[in-house]
Image (cartoon, rainbow, N blue to C red; front, side):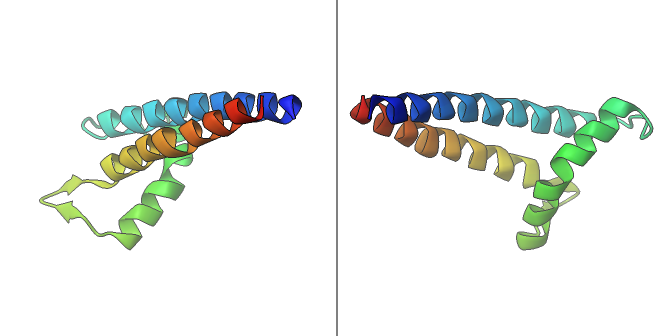
Length: 99
């Protein structure tokens, strides 16, 4: 059973890193929205392609656009923090109990 515990521990660590990186991508996207970046810049295109699917779902489900301020990145960051607090911690605890 320790093999499954080690696998779940590694999976939890990788998931935590991936969620943290995605949160930084969302923050970079939000900061770039304050300025007028070149839409043909590859970095700007990557940020839009990687964040638009989830942000669009949040915008369509919760139309929270008050006064020109888009709250969807904040909601997505809160969801990522919840996943890190709940899912990653749970996976680590399950992995520890299986060792």
